[in-house]
Length: 432
Image (cartoon, rainbow, N blue to C red):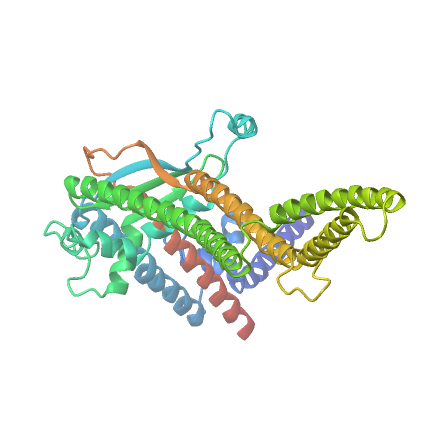
């Protein structure tokens, strides 16, 4: 029995020594130091003490000093700011009224009933979900730009709206805010969201009065509609102006061609060299027929009459006259005898000028069609703002989210403090 008692005492002594050794190791653990620094766990409690109920005294002054530092930083950087934030949202934060509107930026599509291809394409596109177009991003970018502030400031005093007496010192706009600070503040109080699949634009406006939120929302919608109209007008004017320029250029070409034809007719003496050539050719054929008939008569007369017969002389004289007339007509037609104003040369110049006129008139006709087509395309390219959820007067304030913001602030501060606490404990651990 005595041996068993001695063995039992020895085992207890070894267990106590093991507990003390484990406690010393855990005292240097960064995680355990951080846990001791929290107000929910005793400073002198370790993992071995929780298991074995052994509570050795902590005589390390550096450890006690370190735990006090953790507690102090927790109080200064977490508890105090979280409490101040909660007090601000509970008693000082001003009510903010939120007005929301939704609209879609759409393209005008006016297709004629006779245009089967346009009708089929419109029917096919109607069954496909429309994605958010660039026009929606143009409108939202304008809403967040300085341009809309300048446009709205012509009718609404934006600075007075966001410096109301009921606004708290933290949420209100500074009285001497610069244009850049006003633009930054505007971006916080006016929010936009574009739904990608549907292209629907949601605009939210916050202010310190119900009527101000409604007034600003309506003003933003009107400004967006004016911007859409300006963009549509600019697109239409650009397209029509280019097409009109082509019409004016082709019209000038037609006028020039007509003037050239007029000058040619005045100088050459022919209204239509082609018609003159046809008449001269017909006359030449008649003279050649008469010559052939006259030559036949002369041949017959030479067989029956003497050379000095008056009839024979008359036939010869007529034949000579016909030859002269034929040569004159040939010279007028072809310019074989040095005739400058021959019909052949005039006809070549006339055909060139007439071809230029025909080309100019055809180009003018095409440019007229292009102008009409450009007008139809410009009408289809126009955009407009379709509001389907107009802004309404808010009944109660929805901002700020007092409880949510207070909790989120406390959790965020605690998370940041925990990260730095672990880093500090790791640095202290490596110094030993």
